Length: 99
Image (cartoon, rainbow, N blue to C red; front, side, top):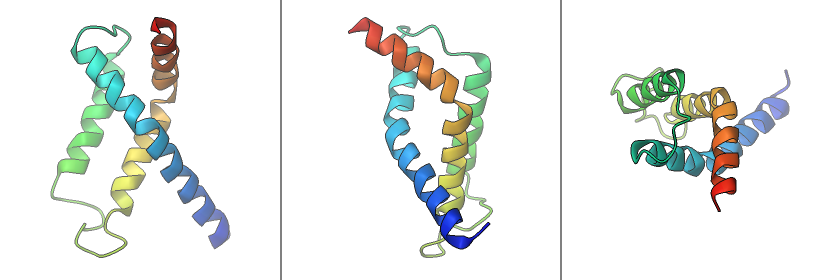
């Protein structure tokens, strides 16, 4: 894989993260408030694991390295959103039907 292709894929993942992160936060809030029953145990485990990694002081790439330290965190968030794509799509449809 060429470097420009890798860079393009990383930029697409960051863009998707930026777009889907607010949706994930709304999903978690709706589930916590008891308004959205479609939140599965699998989804909860994936979200909890990603949050544990992100909040852990131990990283694959230390955060204090300028410019590179947050790449592993962004990758974990992007993988989280990729694995939650079906749940997010179902929540998006549920949210639109409630309006």
